[in-house]
Image (cartoon, rainbow, N blue to C red):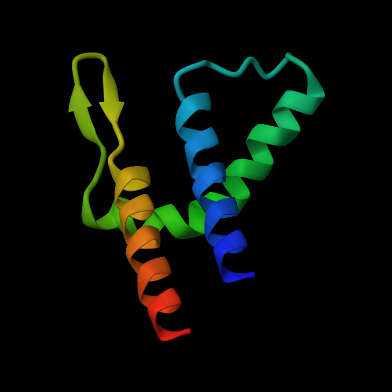
Length: 86
């Protein structure tokens, strides 16, 4: 069960990373808007502490947010620790 929860968070963060490359039109499909909103609601509490440690870097006309990468690394480490205890 623990492995499944870690995998779900991993895939939600990965989906959020991939969706960040495509602008979401507020007038687009309601299903797509609901998916994006759901991903933000589920992953933001996990990403926010990392974003406060390492703010997004300004590159040219945009920003590079490293918080998802840090969150994935910490999730992987926590998963290994928890599985080692079980």
